[in-house]
Image (cartoon, rainbow, N blue to C red; front, side):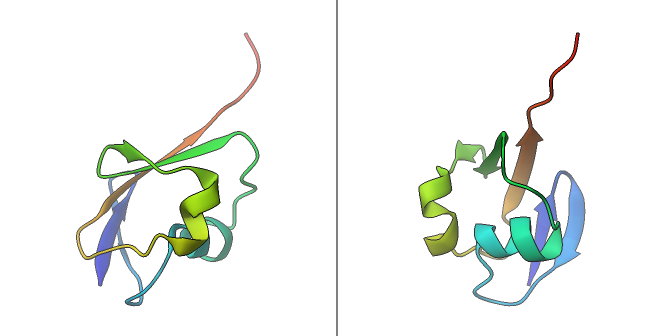
Amino acid sequence: MEIQINNELIEVQNGTTIHNVVFTILQLNPAGMGIAVNDTIVPKSQWETSPLQTNDKILVIKACSGG
């Protein structure tokens, strides 16, 4: 199935979760990270149990320090 991650089309398997996207596909450290699916923030506690659907739009937001 096809999803969008930060406006980039990605092909993933059916049943892929947000957890799979963060750790396997993007290989990111989740510290300071937020995820929205179709403009709705998903709490980290739900990442492993939130399967994605075809055409979902995922926004990955990473906090950074500096100034």
